[in-house]
Image (cartoon, one colour):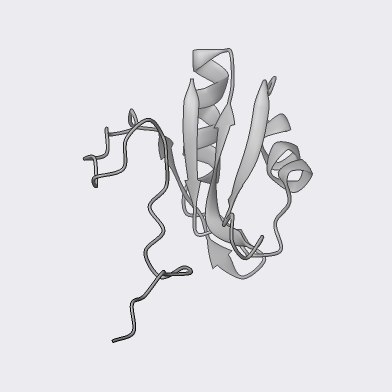
Length: 105
């Protein structure tokens, strides 16, 4: 089961997240989501646990728990929604706000 973990401290690392869930059972993966531009945590992450019963126990045991002064939000992750295409295709990023070739008259 894939589990969403929100309201993480910005200092939380993958190993810290994994350690919190190991108390409830086997963990396949634990990942804190990082901002690709700043390299800082976005304050949430995902944990995958193979055993449904252990995953449910982890959700119950950790949801609302205070960790590093922050009350965690822990629930079953929802499927990722498809994003609307913003004009760039084939996975290309548009260069809005980047260098521009401007004409000067």
